[in-house]
Image (cartoon, rainbow, N blue to C red):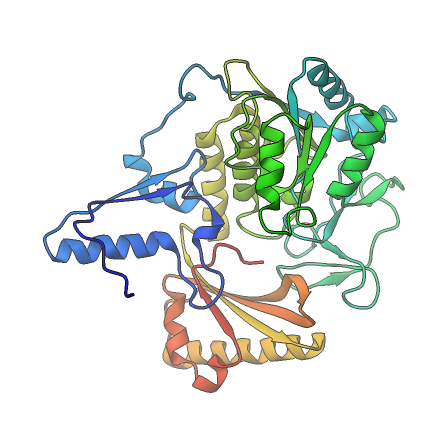
Length: 428
């Protein structure tokens, strides 16, 4: 039975508009916002008015920049509920105190206290991405690319042996034995899983009832709903999980949220990294204290000075937005430019790289011969997850006023070899 078009449509609401899931990442690639704007435009051409409401506690930088002058801001929670109190814990200090546990002293004490009060706890791990970065546990030094000043990503086996790779310029480096800044040998790969958190939690809090929500425990149909309902009915005291527990859950008895290691998400080599982390940490913090009793949030990190964490601690979106917007202006990223991401894949690493370099050369030749004025910058680099489904992946990123204009000038033979994403929400 064919679908009938909506009759007398007058309002489109895009709730949690910052969600990446509003961008379709497989062909045909589109963003829901752009479809809504197009519907509004078509209606206007027929003398009909459609209003669009974009709602979020943490709007995307692009959206807020576009509608900053017309945005309506709510500074308090609905009803009598208060915003939770947020603590940032410097894990370098914990290490200096010889606390090598995944729990800081503060988080450990707060978990005990919350369990004694018969309240519930969420322990959150940001596992966006699969690779680890390298950090000194004494001074907080991060191993960065000399060309790009972004964290290098640790790969254990992708290229046959342990190496660190820059997923912006493609440079490859050896792994340092000691810290280049303070010479300490306490240099580690930041990587931790929900299973290990569950094990440690069971050892330290033997009487606590614990649930875990991650890819392994929610793979079966309705498994997440069962975990959620069980926790909401207070059949467990502690819920451990990844992004899926960070948003949308309303469990009034949750008093404490602990973010185990904020740094994992902060080291993703992508222009949206700070934005995604501020959004995610602010959203997960919002799971605490959703009744009349004030909740608490403890964020553990080796980078307490990071502006995204400071803005999260203050629960101040405007502070975050102004800093992030200024940085994007310097680096020429959206909302100050447009992007086109071209993806190339091959079963062999060298072939993927060679193919990407060949296509990059063709694009540059097209630009020079046609006096193309819409592209300011071209970058070639390996994808953050370099190997997926037995194929190595390379990216070509085009920046400019209208970089998509060059796509129409490419031969069909080239277009068949690549995947194109117009205005991608991630460059990794």
